[in-house]
Image 1 (cartoon, rainbow, N blue to C red):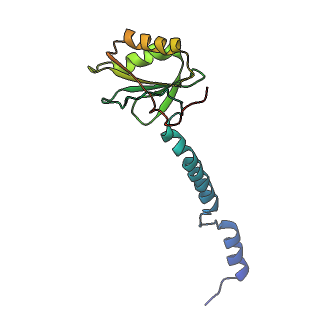
Image 2: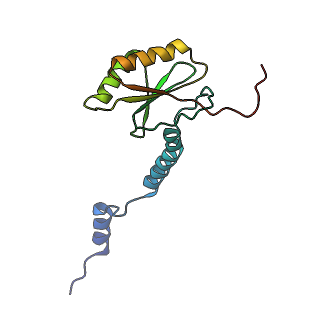
Image 3: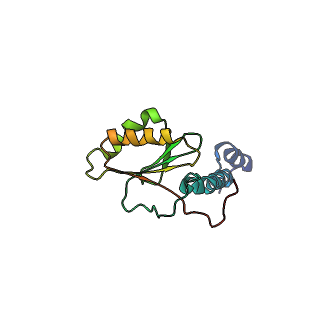
Length: 152
C-alpha cells in the first residue's frame, strides 16, 4: 500500500480551501444601527406637530374623519391624511393636494389646527382654498382654557 506524501496533501488544502463560515459580526452591527435609527425616528412620526391652539370654552373634538391640517407659527402647513404620515406642503400646492385627496369621496371635511400666533388672514386663505375644492365642512381646532388667569 502506497501512502501519499504529506506535502502534496498540505499544498492542496492551502490552495483550494475557502472560508466556509460567514462572519456575522458586521451584519449584526449594521442591524443594530438600523434598529437604533428606527427607535429614534418612530416616536417623531407618531407625535404630530406641536402648536399652541387658541383657547375656547367649548369642545372641538372631531366627530368625523377627514383631512387634518396643522399650521405652525411660521406658516408651515402639515397635512395628516389619516395614513399615519404627516407631510409638509406649501400653500401654493395645497389646492391640488386637497383635490386629489377628496377625489371620488362624497363626504368632504377638513380640520384646521392653527397656532395662535398665525395671522387670521392666513387661516382664512386656507379655508378659502378648501371651499374652492368643494369641502363642505371646515372645523377649527382649539384648546381648553387654562384655569390660571393670564397676566397682560
